Image (cartoon, rainbow, N blue to C red; front, top):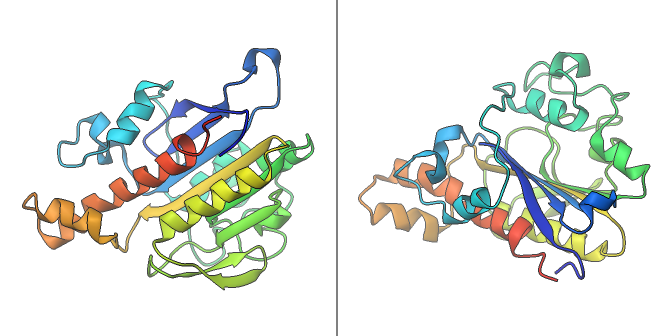
Length: 253
């Protein structure tokens, strides 16, 4: 847990959640910042927006405690959206226009949120899907992030015991991908407790392949859904539970 600092959610969209430290925001302090992104989670993929098939009590509670934006729009593709969020610029200005064949690579001279915060004594970490370029100068470590655990490319074919980059070194994870990214993010925040930190947690789910732990799959099978729908509906639930771990469960003073 992060001693002496709590994280209060201040922004919620259908795809992304940003949280800031609630301590002394009015006094212009340096709050901890957590950005959580769920890949391919649409507006209608959560219960709070009227979907009766998917149970998302954690996200519902987070939304009730947050400032919500219901007129927030992004590019309908992964890499361009990420480039816009990281730079605050229209995606075509960053050099990103698609998701494959090099069109996902962000220009190396773009200034990211991580670079700006790092110049202001922030510790910066990126955990999960990057999808804005694998090699120098697009690699997260070259775009302002002190620590990177995840995949630099766009698609992952399996969500259990997968291989990821830890900065520049390949290592195999253990267990479900979303749980792994969450634990790595929490560890980063705990290790950087003495400094303000930016923690960018970017889950692969609910993007295909629709692979989920048995507890999420069986929940919807028992409700009468077929295997495909049980896997699809279980993906947002898995992401939301991990969101609870990264944003709600790790910040008690």
